[in-house]
Image (cartoon, rainbow, N blue to C red; front, side, top):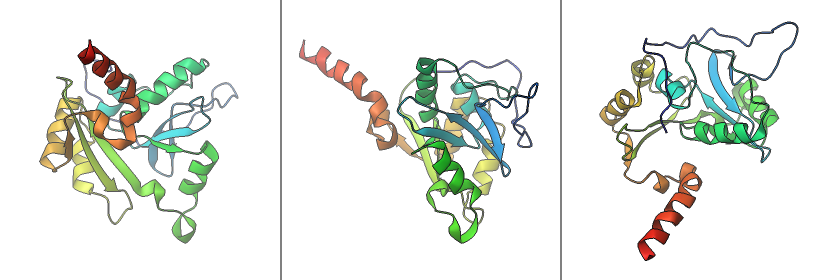
Length: 198
């Protein structure tokens, strides 16, 4: 699944903040909290998904324009569920609900849990073969600053793959073998198994 962006290159404005349009503050797919950029989704199972500081390649891959931050949540729950699945494909964290997520991010210091720091970066080769995964701790004193800087302007997943490979990311020949997104590939594996038995 490859999103399509414009031909020109993109960078993400980390200074972007949620805007109020005509006195209404709708739920946006992209928002900023405490100098962190997030893409978020509200699936029908009642949980809340958010991806912290996505790269331009991440945004394009899930069908968003990195230069267009004012994208509202879909009014169709079916569309929202589909977007949530795409968000999982770029390493979004799943929370019990939005309140729990925001509480963890807003509470800093000793009162803050460590779950928000468990971040990951995915890269999907354009030949549809495999998945690169780099898991890291995003705490300010532990995050891989050099890697994050290298990814700041990446425009496509092949470039992201090359960078993650250089940083010795883990490669999964079968993305369904990676536990956080294995459920997304269950039906696909079941279909393949059925075809082999025919």
